[in-house]
Length: 180
Image (cartoon, rainbow, N blue to C red; front, side):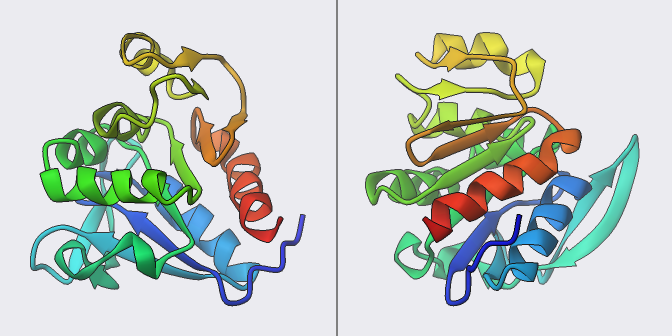
């Protein structure tokens, strides 16, 4: 589905170890629909490195350092998975605060695969219906979320998906949230 996202600003929060397809493919789709998508990352580097299959993948340029980013500058937030990426980010208070700010502002927050770990850490999962990579089911349940096995789950402005194979439905749900 094509969405009219001209003028929409989307942040993708990631660090080294992001699942390559879960950052690059939603970014490509959202940009093809007219959105401006910025990769936001902690630290002072200019690039972060992805994870592809069972080894390190490609590097991606950082568009905006986290320390100079504000939820006020964006219309939505995307949180890719990979095991390393969200596990690292959930220990970064500034990253967690950035996610909380989107939730507090009522802006769409979309997390895929292991990305919902960040919804646990930020408190956004509590009382919400979500999905994720199956190994996060207990973590999300312990955080007060209702976990379901589905390609994409939309609960208000919270959008979650399970795995790379769900990316088309995931990106479509983000597009609908911003276009509608």
